[in-house]
Image 1: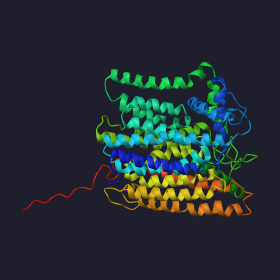
Image 2 (image 1 turned 45 degrees about the horizontal axis):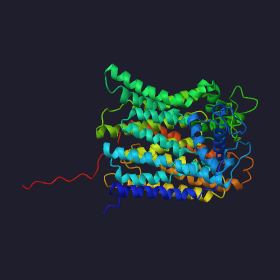
Image 3 (image 1 turned 90 degrees about the vertical axis):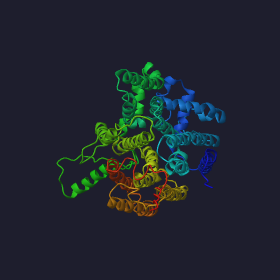
Length: 553
């Protein structure tokens, strides 16, 4: 008897996987935590202790509030219970505070809020199972295993400390509403998400175009168009008004916007995100060295830009053109244009074929917009790669031709998160979890997600629509992560150059991973617009094709 049969039994396995993952995350309760732990503790303190009018003015601690208002209200709600667990948790102070009770409570809020992500995944899979041509039932448990034990979320949320799982859960809920053709609910849910973390503004055009074409323009009559446009518009404006309205009334929008968009922090974060600007910075440095040997630049700054000091701030490139926020914004928009065009190909109706195609096209648009913003955005954090990886792995579950790209990009993205945990005590766990998760990820994509009951090898046509040569190069590039790790984490720290070039390991990691992500991006575009259908090879087949019976002669 098949183990995964019946909704009750399937639900039991689903919950069992989640509980197993929670037990693993509890092991890191008192492990390493970054300054983000104090950031969120301070935000709970100031939202609890101060009136709304002072939230974006308070600066006792250097960790000032720089998230949108709805997230501030989320912190205030958590503080209402936290103050009973430890009264000092909600005391504004310049010095960090972390008692045992505070650590347990804050870690617990991350674990519990992440449950929303699993609820959203269950909802999305249920919708796809009933309303589309995809066979999601047999894929649900492998999908929740990849999500519950997600290496990136464990590193960023449960060790480093953030609430990305909760926010990605809201994103996944909004995706499920889009797939279900409940566009007003999708617009409301995404506006809530944007009002909690403005990073998601980059994917707003995808939601706008998909809802405009799929909902507002579905009925050709002007009355239907105007009424539906007003319905969505008023929903978005209503949520935005609730979030930002009080600060508009108090005349604090300039102060709030300066907190949300601190352009003076510069093009890159202290640890360069593995994107196009990491490569750009390295090329500028190489040109400086080359210019010192073979002068070719007519003018050089008296003091070359220091981009490797681990500090945040505006920088001026020495040889190449210095990048401004406008340049980054234009390149980001250009990069996502093909995917915005893809979103216009919405099929109306709730037929299984239409729901399946719309789901794939929407996920492609979401991935493309997030990927473009990661590669070309201004002051991108390395943690933003998670916004690419979640929808990319969902896409790989329903469109087989994206599976190699999903495996390649996920492995690179997860490797780039290793420097976030720089303590030696957690190093064995961090590395072993990465190796284990990568192996499980490979098994799920290329074995459990088999096509028509077969098990093709990684890189076969069923699992990749890109050139086989690029697949082989991608494999070699992934294997190159092993010598990179050996050099940056095992050899270089004990060399005589470690004190002279302390930023070198981080720079090598950013450049190596950034090169792969930059190359994979056009491959993803080619894969999307290839002659193969949007679903990939044989996605819609539920079972192996039956052989035709021969009639007796």
